[in-house]
Length: 510
Image (cartoon, rainbow, N blue to C red; front, top):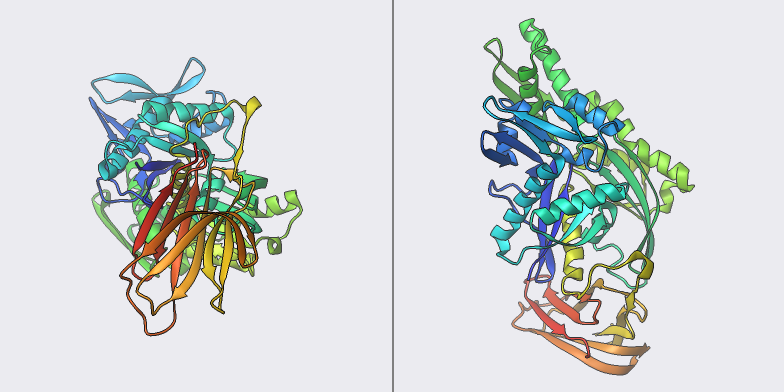
């Protein structure tokens, strides 16, 4: 059975599944791994995702964008008023809440934010169903750390209306750490991690202390005045200026032409994250005039220099708030689509000298992958809901160990889950075995290790057979241990070179 992780952002949504010991992002029906968080209403049709985005220029007033920003807010809230000022789709008040007024010429109707969020999440569920079948309903949904209880409840209700069984609402910073396995790879690891997200409409920095797989938030600072949209707007404004230079016409008063430029500016921004130059061509942009312009990464960096500094300001504010310096952090985790911008990553690396910049996973997929990993841990628990006043945490009663051989060939035992580890929990452990052997034996025990001796019981044995032999050297063997709240243990063992893997489940004692 697959577990699902869903991240609904202001501009995009992403869904991942955890199955057979690993998390993977699922591509939608257009082949994209992220889906625009947009819904278009056309007559009796409700169009979600890329098709809604592609038709936005022609149907701006009936296309809803960025519904996440107003979840759980009253109409008079500043957040809603700011949203209304930038929304092409009319927003009215109904019972104190913002409601979208859709008028396609034949039918006029009012659409609630709950309906819009539900449609996007239904699209995510359909994407997961297409990949894994009818069992893709148990899900972990992510929210920003600063979401209020009302915002969380509204998102949960939308997910349940979309057909998900919500296992847990997980904060985005925690999901980002889980995606990279931070705190899961060693039972005794302790470090400080900065999670930095630059999404479409906001930037935030969160400091987290990781200790033996437990996460403690030290502080968080966000800024909703800067995001990927501001970078796109800056580039679109530059293109409008270039058009005026070439054609002696100002198209800023033409909203449709500016939306075309905005769309092409967004595509150019994405291209410049991987290439040094991008070509922007718009057919019949204004008064029948075509427009073409080449944009270099250096030009983009120059245009957005102030935005870069503004984007990093939450980090400076956070460090001042918690009285720490950049040297106190061992890792910096990046997430959010705009965090892929090379110049931004360069500035972060310059500030966090000596810290590991975690960006090996596509930044717009990180949070969904972490949510899927959490769902994989939670799946199978008898009761995932609990009362806050009566929280009971199950713990490992004995050490869980894996037997290895040291450099001298002597048996030694490595503790994976120390006694007292809160459950559910997941750990990843990598060890080396001789490359000359065609098979590798992995033994797992429960008990207490005392140097090279051991007191306890043998739980499981995994054998990786028919491995590709090497003339010399060692092979890396990766083992993933997932212990559920009931004490059952799932072990997956993989040879990194060939990809050969074996999985075994140790049921809890009744």
